[in-house]
Image 1 (tube, rainbow, N blue to C red):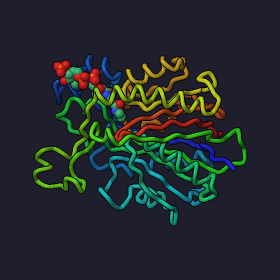
Image 2: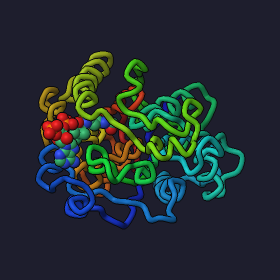
Image 3: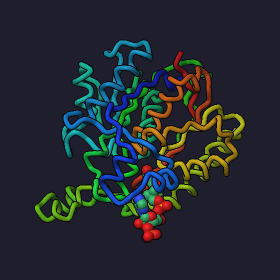
Image 4: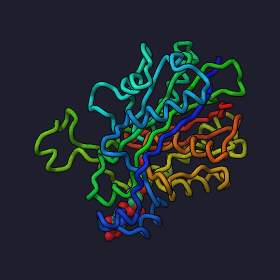
Length: 330
Ligand code: UT7
C-alpha cells in the first residue's frame, strides 16, 4: 500500500502589496527588494479574511480535483504559524467545520515554513500504516497579521495565501510518494521567532509595547544556514533513493528568496526550466509556499500526471525537509 499525492489546490488573496506600496511605508526601494529577494509583489488577505477562510478555499479545490467526496477525508493536517486562534481551537478544526466534514481527525502543526513537508511526512505514515485513507494536507498563512509593517527587514518578504493537497491510499507504486525527510535543530530557535504571546512572555502591555507579537528574523544568518541545509537535504534524499537530479521533473523549493533558490538550483544543477518559481509574485508565504507553487505549476501546465517532484524546504525552528513525490492528479 502506498500514499499518493492525488490533488492540489490553492487560494491567493485578491489584494496585492507591491514594492512601490512598501516604499511608502518603510525606508526601502523597489530596486533593493528585487535585487536582494527577487520579490515584486505579495498578496495580502482582507481584514476580515482569516487563515481558515483561505485554507477552506484551497481545500475545496483540492477535494474537487481529487474526485472524492468530502466525507471520505478522514484526517486534516494543517500547517500554519498564523492560526485563527492562538492555542485553540486548531485552524484544522475550523476548516473541517467550513467544509462540513464531521468526525475526521483534525490538528495543526507548527513547523514554520517546513510545515507542509512535515505534514506530508505524517500523511504518508498515516496511510502506509493503514491508519487513514484520505488525508487533507494544508499550508495556510495570514502572515500579514504577525508582520510588523515598520520593520523593513521582514515586511518586504512575507505574503498571505493557502495551498492544499489530498493524499490518498493507492496500490499503484507509480503514483507513490517515494520518500519524505524532515529534521530540525532547535539550537537556532532565536533566528526566526515571534517572541511574545506564548507562555514565556505572556501577552501584556509590555510585550505589546515592545512589539513582541511580530515575526523577528535574523535574516542574514538564516540565509547562510538555509542555502547550506537546502542543498545538503536534496543531496541526501536523492542518494538515499538512488536518484540523481536528472531523474527529477520539477524542483519545487520553498519560496523564501530568489537568491537562495538560485544558489541551491545551480549547485544541484537543476535547469531553470525544471525549477518552479513563484517568489516574485507571492513573496514568502511560509507553510503555504510549496503547495501554492505546486498549484501554480499545475495551472500553468508546467506539471503533469506522473512527474517526479522534488520538494525542498527550510524555516523557523530551525526546521527543514525534502520530499520525492509523484504528481498523481489525473
Ligand atoms: O522562510 C524561512 C526562512 N527565511 C529565509 O530563508 C530568509 C533568509 N534571509 C533573507 O532572505 C535575507 O537575509 C533578507 C532578504 C531578509 C535580507 O537580505 P540580506 O541581503 O541578507 O540583507 P542584510 O540583512 O545583510 O542587510 C544588508 C543591508 C543592511 O544595511 P547596512 O547595515 O548594510 O547599512 C540592512 O539594514 O540592507 C539593509 N536592509 C534593507 N535596505 C533596504 C535590510 N532590509 C532592507 C530593505 N530595504 N527592505
